[in-house]
Length: 261
Image (cartoon, rainbow, N blue to C red; front, side, top):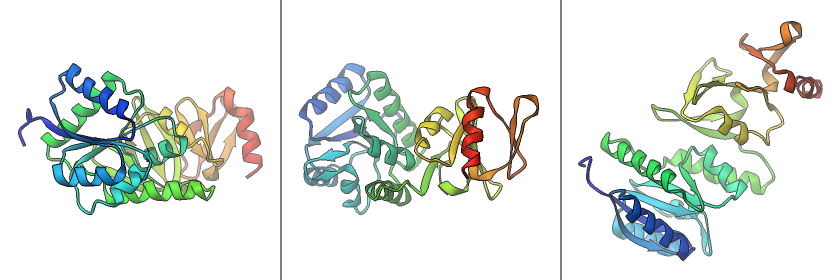
């Protein structure tokens, strides 16, 4: 496909005003997209996508006849990028983040929309896969199912510049901020540089009692703490012998949580 070819877009959302808002942003921003059509429910969305073969689908999560996740499960083969458009549904947002899938919060911001569309164009330009992998979709569904069972997700997808990595949450030793990126360290000595900043992961892991932010640059899995060293302000020695600074702000809570493990 040519770099300057317009992206073919569809919207699947049960709120007509959301369709109107998005369409107006497409025109206003001169984003070089072609809106092929809109659907207000899962059933019609599946039909529209099958008939139009879009490059990009803006997909709502909660609709009268199901969810955006249900829609994706009903499509056997596809090669389009999905950007979820959603309100502040905490469980759905967590599922999206654990699946490392793009999203925009309502009301959609013009600059954030332009950024998301440019990213989709870049993926197409370099012939990168636009579609969500089956593994990502499985993590989405599993995450929601576990929430319904009052359990936390056991797997997560980590987006990097090279692609998507799928990991067990229990194997994460620590996360360290690397400017606008985040370095993951795992129990098998593997390291991955994620494309998101540490703040996003701190929010993502906030419900896990085994994970704690101990410094502005560090989030650790308390199960992998080997030693707390009190000298020089205090630091942790992790199971992989890495050393992690501990901020005074978190020291008291850290010691209390370690004592309960």
